[in-house]
Image 1 (cartoon, protein in one colour):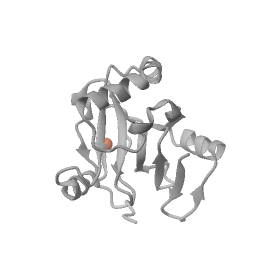
Image 2 (spheres, helix red, strand yellow):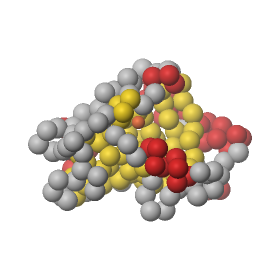
Image 3 (spheres, helix red, strand yellow):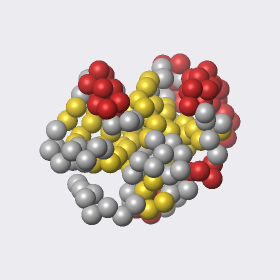
Image 4 (cartoon, helix red, strand yellow):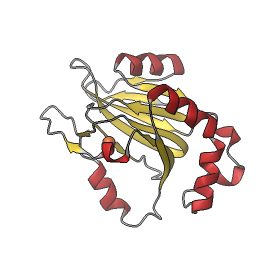
Length: 180
Ligand SMILES: [Fe+2]
């Protein structure tokens, strides 16, 4: 279950209905997949072979196809990050810059945790969405955001795209960004 932290006020929003309502009000799609169906050996594995990635995509293929059909996504893959990822610190530094894309950024977390930092409505400002396994989020195109890991620095997620080129990051300079 995701939790929200509003950076301006330190307010936290918890509980399925509250989180869903808040994210809807900010134009962010938020859903759940049932990760119980993931084979036990893949629930806590962050270094994945190509076969294991395929196995994860097959496990969630109905969820993927359902979401893709509703939102027009045409292609998908798996990303995994952990301390075993070469240059993880450099990668995270690169990630942690506010940017936009010309299509939605979609992540379905199948293991581990992660945070989306998203620019909300003017009166809300930036907020964090702390995600865990089973959480599915779609940040709409042109919405300033970035993604990073949580303290455990481990995640596996399905990414869905309309076209992978649409996912190029356009830096978004914002004097109102609260870095904490
Ligand atoms: Fe992004």
